[in-house]
Length: 353
Image (cartoon, rainbow, N blue to C red):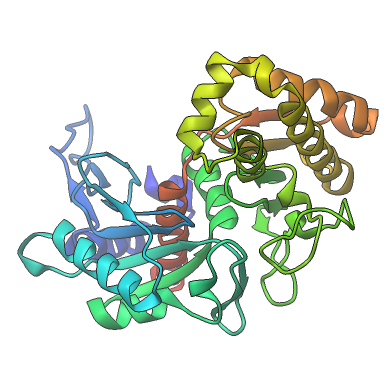
């Protein structure tokens, strides 16, 4: 089977499988005895945890341990509030990572999902508008040094792109886009089967297009960026301003469910600008599918259908006809895992050939 799918010779496949078995990355099942010929060997991705996914977000961090199959479970997940100092952040992540692995065994590799602009050439976060303790830092390099293993910096929306392609509804798609509208507004684009990265890996910062020159101050320093009006964070800010006190995502979700009429203007504002963002992505990149990741307006059919109605009014008819729009099935934990799994498996490919 593997020889037919891969195009490799039987000895090459056997050598590669033996190498993966020794590493503990695949496990052997009971052999199948055919009617004719020798029994075949059945292997599958190892279910025991060998990689870690670390998600650093503006308010919450989480760490998940998984095998190469990428199965994310609550049992193997740890969460904590994001500290306000970088050294405290590293200490907390290091402690949780060590706690997830038995007998002090280090993970094979770690994927570290981060928000903001990631310069791939310099391997650092240029700026993280919603979490400035990460500015000019590389938490993947620092965690790798502490834990003694390979670690990779994964821009969070690129990670969501990879996760949707590996585990979600983008399987088999070569041209699609991912719009993350949670804390900020990030765009990931898969074109011809490859992530669109730009010269320094910072392509996709759609959230920092100016749509209101006199608008609210953005975390990047400018005013009126799209992410100040089209995201979950924007809706939370508008609801908080109306309430005269600071609300969180859970409180806003409750108000959306119980008292939407009291916040019709705020809901309409974010709905309109989110539709503008989606329409712009479709008009510019012409994807076969666009996936939207969020926690508020994208999580119920009622609110998301309002967004889609405005999208239909603002998108070029021909481009929209070729594109499906849906919420994502993947999460940022899977994004961190997908990023490191894609990296390490690509690294093995030349040796296998």
